[in-house]
Image 1 (cartoon, one colour):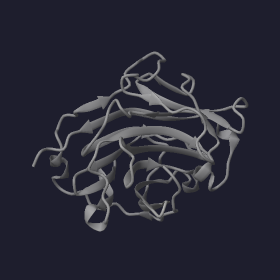
Image 2: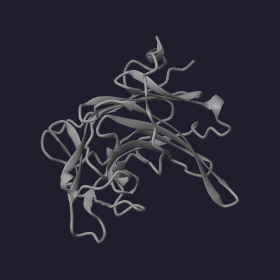
Image 3: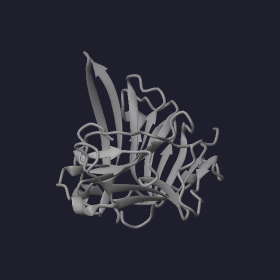
Length: 258
């Protein structure tokens, strides 16, 4: 979830018949957020990142006011603050590193997104071992330049040359009203990364098109709501707070052996 280019929304690719048959029918792992009273996310699955990150304007906390489970949903809530230096809001960034990892398979996340100038929600994945070269998988990221009408998926391949970090990106956006609930999906095989919205394919990143392919290793999942930085490309609006990312469930299906 670094810097990005603006992309024109593309039409959906047709659904590939039989694509789902590559994956097991029952999830190997799922997170349903079934608590009916306010509680923190399951600590055996989720850890927190705290503090400020780069040029962004949120301060991540592990407070239950920012990250909580209630009524069958995970909420990551951005709240206006005056208590953390240059931060405009407090928010949440949680991850599964060292607890739940993924390598190949299908990952589905059903959620609805917050919108407003400056807000930047994302579902993304990083490798457990981030030595160069490494890859980053952005299943979903949204900024308000898109007026709630689309989001993008992105694949980063990062290497070092002469001590300088080189980042290659392969991103595409898709038209959808992100204020409604949708299922955001990644299908991951040894040969490609496929991105879907509500079961419809819109982006494919293929091993055949890359000299480096650092996606044959375990990854962990990150969920967060940022504010500012690239998220503020089309301006900032502090009146949007409080606002929340709501996640209904997450399911991971193992890739069937060939």
